[in-house]
Length: 381
Image (cartoon, rainbow, N blue to C red; front, side, top):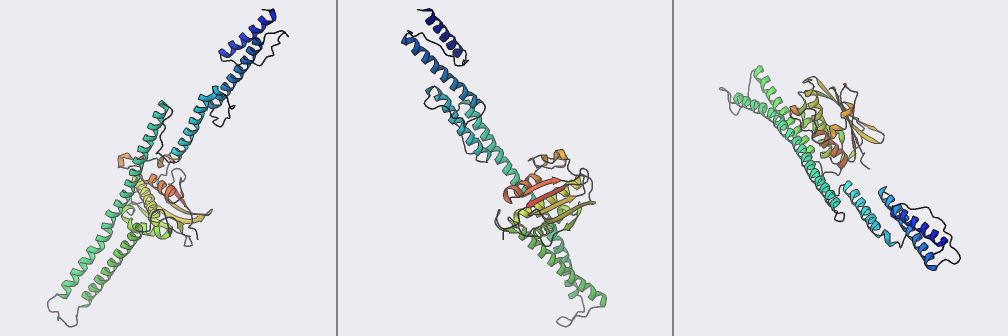
């Protein structure tokens, strides 16, 4: 072997050693003597191809490690086959992850070994969490209806009681000894005044019951959920009527309703549920702050920035800035000692966001009361 051939082989050996160590050397020009053997030239060509392939593998691996799944590797390079398969799997996994993030929890991964098991366990945990949250939100709505049911019994039983008392009084008057049955009824002036008062009270009670029943009917039977157009002001008034017992001992309610308010998109039953939960939340906050009987809740409706706004403001201590997102976490409550379950505001946000296509925000200066603002979409004409 000539000295030149020996030097050439040494250079090729160095380059192969670099490739074996994971280093791809910069291309170098190896000069051959004019009488170099064809085998030596073929060896150099093979080493050069190996270096090119290793460089492609390194570049492709680096791209995958950096998350660049759209990287286009060189075609017809068999050495990249396993990496191309991994790239395809990662692309599919990315799509599945996006689907899961969008709420589609029916997916499973079966092509990445232990990672697949972990991913599938995560999906199962999310599915269970969603189910638990859905049950909790449903329970919250049922609890709201329970509040109404107990209050409605009082709202209806009270007028029924004095209506019954008045009717018994009238019965006694009509059955009094000395009355000329079948003739005109002649009563002393004071007795006649009592009769007129009893009749007026009875009529008032009947009207009160009718108003309560009508409000409850509109509250609970206002169209299919998630569809329709709602008169927000009317929904507020109906909710106040059927839920009076839940807040009247904690606070007075001041209404500032825009008489020219447009209809909002969504079912009236859903809007009433939001108003109810926000009223209950404000009343509970005032009770917890020790303002029993001295609380004030202001309910305002207005139009702003092409949205219909519902604002419920109380004169309690407010919600600290650092907790204004936390209050929407399911089951979180600042007063577990009071039996609070942390469902009211999460229920409101769920309805407003997912049913009504709106937004629920918390504001107010610290220490000066909470401001809860619901932004709703005007109904299309």
